[in-house]
Length: 118
Image (tube, rainbow, N blue to C red):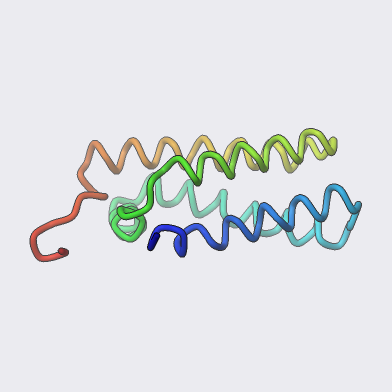
């Protein structure tokens, strides 16, 4: 259950997206847009920076990938159902770069535990 702590922020963001879209809270959508843009930038940087990839995916090695992908899918669904297509594209890109980063980390061994890391 340690992995639940790692996805707590993602759960909160999904809840905020739901509130913003269903409740038509425009100021909350602005915060979500800024957050989404920053997360997308982070995902791109992590994908192309080996040191950051090692740091991020080592920290997330105890977290199964399916909860994050499920939350990303929920975010994309909520945003597209609410006709917030620009933010939907941001979240689709976040999801894509997350998946690509995960694959790259697995192939390079960045997410593996070492003897010293146990």
